[in-house]
Length: 441
Image 1 (tube, rainbow, N blue to C red):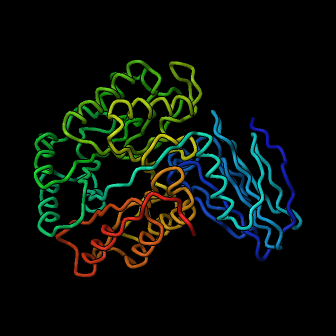
Image 2 (image 1 turned 180 degrees about the vertical axis):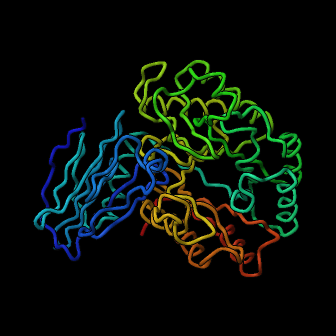
Image 3 (image 1 turned 90 degrees about the vertical axis):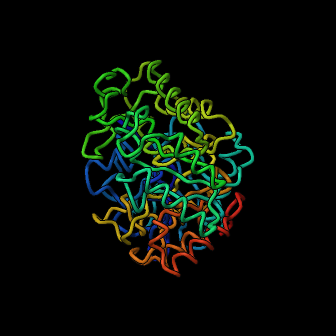
């Protein structure tokens, strides 16, 4: 049973005090709340605890729970206090509960407390120290891109890609990378074989290169679907005794990146993709590689997860661009060029089930703002894609979020569906990509 030790009892003004809570992975809500709300956001569906929040570590019914990071602004004029972890093989949970006019802060592992003038200043200072401790070096500028996901989703075809490449080229949009998203593979977990909608990645990559652009691809390397051949033929490759979630109308499981067979499979997958001419990789649902369960090597989850990402990096080479998504945030620092820092955006503003970890512009905006301090310190922040076609609800507001807080700029509309406003906005956001320097509020 996890034990929490009290760290501080901070007198607060209940009307003005705020608590900043950092979520476990890309999609977990991260941001500031009034201290007197009943609780921060919680998963609405049980499956979301593993799939969108921290597996095996549910927050209490009331109050707040930050994963490795929590800050308190007492609202009294006294300093902000930032409670933050140091890099290691565990990430402590930090809780805060309002009791008799005080925020009682506790943690289940070592965290340090540091004063700051504002929450934003304190988070930035903590992130500077965290990055320095892991030896994070110069952060590379991000390419611009176009992604198939938010129009075609899993039904994308090679012809859809070719149509949009031609449209981008004809309109001279400033797009460096064409990202083929989910739908190219035969099954989740079966990355060496193509779906019936794609006949040759090499041929498609050559056509993209013919327009002067690069090819990117989406992969969920640590996720294995119950419908896949890998699941049927190699159950020993899975993290045992734990389910990653449910998606694509099937249960999903985590790949054990310490198993020799699984490691060889990862090498073969990414070698095949590199040989196809791909040099930009979005690896998604990678929280599955950090699930807490028995592994072949006996390694702890964070060490095992990092070894899997490092193997992918070694296979694709140092010059390829690596974007993480659905990733445990603090265990990922120092491994990626760019990182999704929010839930998925969506054509609709509000999350359909009220959970901002699920796809919506509202949820994506909340955590994009809440994790702005990570841009230029840990990596290039990815707020998710530019979606600007007329069918997008409140598209002007989402464009403003990307404009103010975005680092990675990826368009994800069918180009033919953009009206004049959508085309002008997409062009402007692609042309004005921010540098990979630390974000300043």
